[in-house]
Length: 242
Image 1 (cartoon, one colour):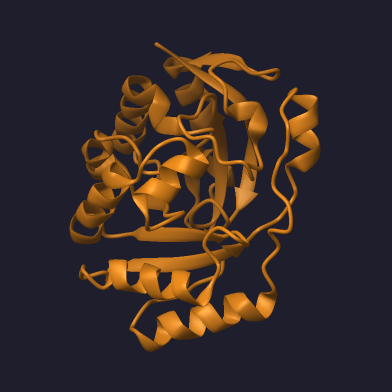
Image 2 (cartoon, helix red, strand yellow):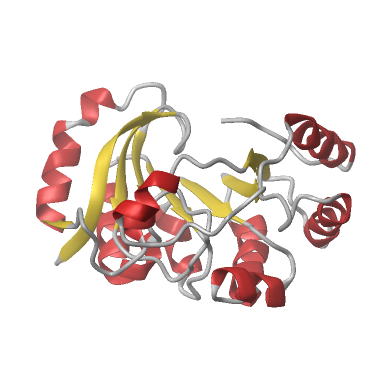
């Protein structure tokens, strides 16, 4: 069984606890116009390569001395759950041999809760509260995402919810109130929340991939993020910056 990837490497703290070996899996089912990794959106990309599960496990075991400060392995994308069967298998094997596992996901897979038992850390994006707007901008509604978030709030002990703040999309005063209203439906006390300001780090790669970068005037002032963080803290949210 093989996994398709477009990048792998170590990163500290931003993709889970400690120093982690991060695998970027190829393919995504959303079309976020601000994506920082457009080379990973299509099923096949300019940098695609494959690894068998056995090869990946051997590589991870060799890298164990590098998993300091509670580190381990993180799967991201693209969208890692687009390769669900192989992803579940590798996570199961890693859990069996005591490797810390993490997943960064857009939360769109209806099978995502099947992975909860083999994930030490779950990092989920929540980009917009309105399903129609979510579908218009990113190509898919958010009903499954909401369902998975609801289950994760109840079932997963280490959940990080990330909201990317995009100007003219989800960064108004009304937007933050709607986000808070949605989360307040749940007991979210096992979860942490992180607000990420829009950036253009991936813009140059869109041209390289033959794609058009259409986002304009989407930067969000730091004071806006701080204001939103404070509003959420006042409502009992555990706000972090990784």
